[in-house]
Length: 258
Image 1 (tube, rainbow, N blue to C red):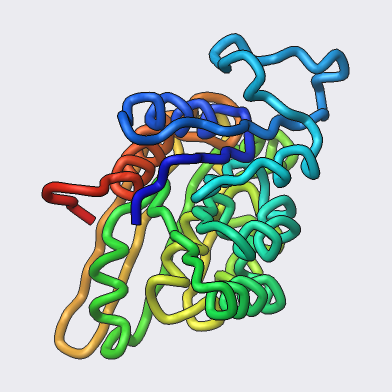
Image 2: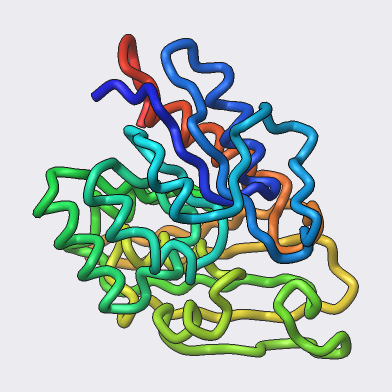
């Protein structure tokens, strides 16, 4: 599949990383970037965006034909647009906590099957999804522990220690903007209800830290990923990861490292 017309939903740090990567791809071009009205009452077009590409109306964006859409906005946005996008194009969703909702996961699966389209799950801020996919039949336990600042988790500034412990499904519902890593691990591995999630608030830290512990029939993995915050909920590695996902999806010839 060759993707030539690209839609982007979200004009933040990840949206910009996706846009910049598409510009590097000779055969593809951006058709639109859907930006949020929130905090942008005057609808100022981001300086990095090409003229005429920035839109603020969902209907206007979806009226422009594309081959693939990259979503980098919010779980609620992905949940609402996925069925409509998948009716006519492929979709890559970075806000994958949305799939913790059974109705959303079902709608995405059914629309892909009905329309012959595909949903791409990017690895985001984490590594090792290939191992989870390959080993899911013999994996017995998966625990992921995320440590961030209290503010980054939407908690009171003096919050510290474990603020959540439970299933990945419940973690995604409680922290939809903070635990996309948990969703990606759950989807690739043994599911939202069997994957254990722990969220820890660490006052004063500017680092986002994820520890993944996996055990199965005759094997065990224990690895960590950390990056500094770029502000808000995005770590320094995530935009680079997003660009890499875009690059692999758009690649149409030669050796593609997936």
